[in-house]
Amino acid sequence: MSIIKLIKNYGKKKRLLFTTPSHNQGIFIPPKCKNLLGEKYFKSDYSEIEGFDNLSAPTGAIKEAQKKAAQIYEAGNSFFLTNGSTSGILASMIATLAQNDSVLIARNCHKSIYSGLVLTGAYPIWLTPQFDKEWGIFKPIKYTDVEKALNENPQIKVFIMTNPSYEGVISNVNKIAEICNEKNVILIVDEAHGALWNFDKTIGTPAIYSKADITIQSLHKTAGAINPAAIMHLSFDSKVPSEKIQKALNLINTTSPSYPLLLDIESTIDFLGSKAGKKQIAKLIDEIVKFKNDLSKQENLHIYYDNNDITKILVKIDGLSGFELSDILFNKYKIEDELANDKSVLFLTGIGTDKKKLTKLKKALAKISKKALKENKIIDDNSNYVNIEPKVVFAPANVYNQDSIEFQKEDAVGKIANELIVNYPPGMPILIPGELVQEAHLPFLKDKDTLKVLN
Image 1 (cartoon, one colour):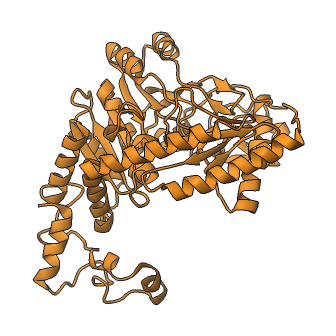
Image 2: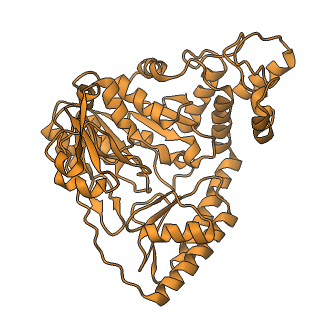
């Protein structure tokens, strides 16, 4: 029986529940919340009562829903995540790493990796992708760089990477997985932004198809689910037993998972795997292709295409920095982007992005680009970004509970950081506790006067 049928059928039984949640399926709802959300959400909110399933040891409806999801995704095993991709990343690290184990991590991974390092006590070896100064983003991860790092550090047990990147940049996971499997290294792919890939291969190739061991996808980012719905997959050939993943999830998950969220995860996946779902995804792609083709006619407007997930729209306009373009869109056109940098602006799209939204954005960008062309303003290319190679002195877990002292940031150079510095979005760490503060970090700390370092 599906989760949605379980909830529908249970409502007909009219049992008297003296259990959590205490709103009693909507008998009590805070008035302001009721006006905004209505009653139906609360009517589907149950705990693990008699006849229901348990996310920490599923045997009924949740087990069946996860089994069906694995079939839809062509995975060996799938796990519903009610605390976002972050919980999947943490569980995958807990299941595969122990104290002092070496783990290779792409530096453009999400900041949740830091939490995983603290929880496991693993020692990070960082792989920093090349930086594209023209667009202000990281380039794809080179498989030759992965191979080099693994050859130089044969003690590495796990490699963690993000694909696609936040901006939609796609790396050659097939080749990377081949290298990792040859060296018996576990490959974990944060595929948070690739939740539509399984349902339309023209967007990208899911990592489990390339025999990555573990992948994590955020259903709320592109696939239409509510925050923070996500899912984790093990490939059929995964070197990680499913029992270890369940055990790790049980360490970090709440014992009171949200049934409305589980219902949403199940319903989202069922729709994505249906003919109607695939048709809607195809329609989205067609609209985005047309959007990009139309805008490409603007001679001073540029769209990023290289190794890119088509659902990500990365734009830059000659004569404007990414921050200036972002401000104009927000203040004049009431359009909010996902991310801006010195060079470009990122717009995320997903299954709920319709033609009307894209048309409004297209018209705004066209007007802004025409005005910029007339003004013919030239902006100084004062980008001083450099690929900072992290210098790890201590593993993050070893300094987590250490005392800190605050220095003026210029005086902190040469000392050991005890503060996590992250630009959010996209959530990639600039400086992690246990690393040496370098002169090259200072331009990225312009919003900070002081920095915490080890005492």
